[in-house]
Image 1: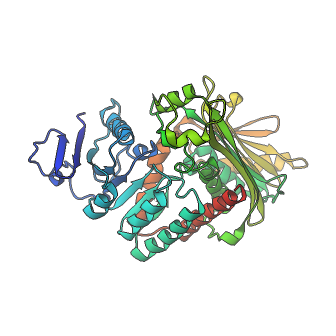
Image 2: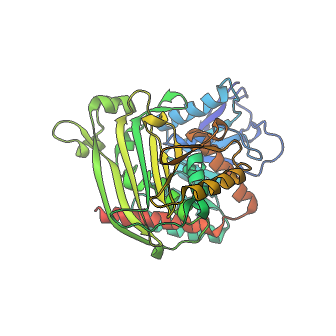
Length: 462
């Protein structure tokens, strides 16, 4: 279909939508009725901002206002949105109204052109963006991490207080809750006949582990991902310890204590560490398109001419007495035929629940239920059969097959949405909160405690 975009700055406007220059901006939408949700995208510097618009949503206006500084980040964002509009299969029909200028934030706050601000980009400014948006009465859907340092966390806590006062909803994009193996790991951990009760573990032998391996060079929406140069600056993007680990800490909370209101006193970080990933100039160019390291990254370049990216981090902590270890590792490029991977373990008194995504699994996530020593295999097998029958109403086609150590959960492809599709699922969930007019109290506590945990680990590595 024909892309519909308006780009304007100050009094000047460039119209690329088949409308005449005299057509008012507000009249350019072809949306019928008055949808209650009107999106605004602020300073999109990360491809996650575009993935929110990979699909259309009921009761969400097709017209989206985008406010950003001029530059490559905005260009790449628009290319992604336009590719969704012009694809052959299920094309979207977004109408983009772009304001490009140095005063993009002030203009957005003043325009009141929508009611939900989507944030995915500059993590250093994200706490400021969040606070100013909620103070202005906007709802906010923010990509992870919401904050990358303790100073930002102080602003975030204030933002949640303001959001409650203003009656607006502040929420972060936790896509991994929608990965089916994670959801099922949580389900089975709540079934005593299969899992038993949750083990506590120790600092040296945690009862829960989450490990995520990512790659700087990869495909997104079928195309090589081009990252902005600032992505490699930990003062802007944040270290992996407080970035991707946001997902892992969220999953630990979500699986161990579902819908429980948590407090910071429930958390005790016991050890943490970080380490670098070396990146050559050629690898940096492949990732960013830039032929040399920018001046602001020179302080991270070592004597051999390689950029030492502060990309890896792990820590161990106790949550309400249960010890968990979360670890994020970044490599430059995945070997041929592989991709980003996730591995996880939860240990109960009867079984351990493993998510694996290695060569044996064809680099696709798979869930295993493995018997612990001394467990009555027949009794667990019987309980598992009942559990599968009950879960099939929610997860049609679910089954198991026997393995040497227990069972593998067989999950039909119809239940495997894929990482990019999870952004639409998160957005749809968020829109349901908007319709209800509030977030569940446990969701608010989860976000605050999650970022408190990350900041405690961050301070331990300083």
